[in-house]
Image: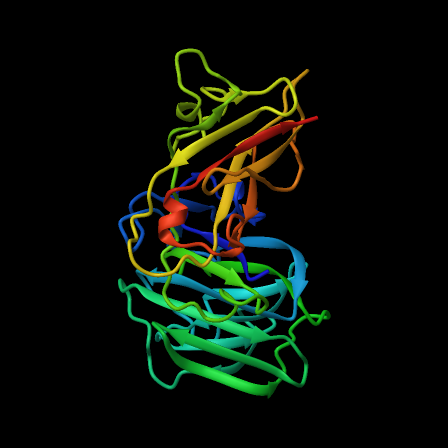
Length: 348
């Protein structure tokens, strides 16, 4: 494993379609066109008074002692209180925060153990965050109560680091969650182009620098069109919405071993490396229909099938990380990703 999670915030409109939990007092929203690249961004509903907190949490399938993450960030207003880290970018274990990066009222970046009000381990001496400016913030930590390490980068430059320190803010010695949040009465933030990695593997296993996370959608028929589409539409036209439209149009399989694959838009990026692919399927089971599926990858002319996955009664996203091109067992390239088909296979 290397890449664990990524998000462009461009292919859905409800935060909990991709994140495990979201606050309800101040609900996080997807801002259309509010991102750094005039794409979407995660943001909050600004509140002028009260201690209303906006937060999203992503729970991983495993726990890790070392994690590294990056995100593009902009705020329209800094916090009023230097004693609290009003904006945070943090790692946690089972809803208990271990350690995170926070930003104070003057624009200093801090590393805090425990929570956004926790112990400040270190902070920048200068104010490095200004309002209405995009930055790329990265954070790497090894969680340990005496031998912990951390490093914070801003636009590719290390601004904070430490070794042989206590980076363990919870009872456990690892983390299985990524948190983003801020007090919405204090600031109005935007996040996009997020990645999360562990340190295993041969690439995407350390700081990636400023990345572009792109959401690409089906744009044509692939090698297979065996599922039944909504009347009057081609199969790919039933699954090409920027945000899924539920029962408005869809493809349906009532028998096992039926394939549907699609060509996809090319990446806008034409230079650089592909650090990984997260393939997302949105679906549900229906009465009398097939209840399981497999993701299908078709880089050239051979089908590669992923893990059998059970569908829930209601629509939900299912995300599959494919860090290697299954055809070559090597890192994806822009060329072979653009040429690939992705799809689904029905299972009993």
